[in-house]
Image 1 (tube, helix red, strand yellow):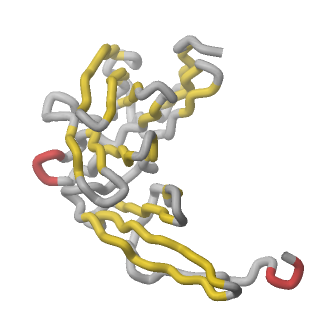
Image 2 (cartoon, rainbow, N blue to C red):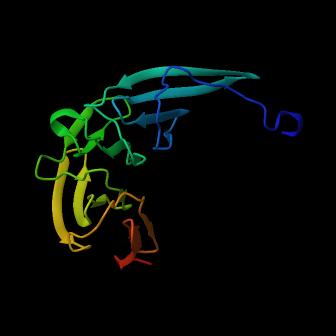
Length: 190
């Protein structure tokens, strides 16, 4: 807006980890969730404006065992947040987890379903596509009631290295990579 362009509107100091890889996740009603690894956990904020005054409110914090991410940006889908817990995430470490916007953890994928630092996407119809650190791709049905694996494939032949890059789903095609190769899979759709 003219003279205001580039001016600092607000800042939040209530969550200040030393290293942040995931991006903030916007939700409804002016809320956004931030997270980081290395023991940082996460924080839910609400930003509001009255006239020219901005207000930033810390709604709650999560610890590293409840809901946090070291590498990937959590996904907000159908009113719930999803992420892979970091390696210091306690008994559920490296599992895919689901949390409500009020901070209630609904479920973890279970010890047979761990994903390292791996990336993930959610399809519009509630399927999670997840890649683990060495290139095994999993397809799971997710929702408020839990996580159910539908298929698993060793896409990179267990030779995948550092398969941490964010993946993207565009027009039914899934793009993903490890440190050496880029893959494109046709998952159907338009």
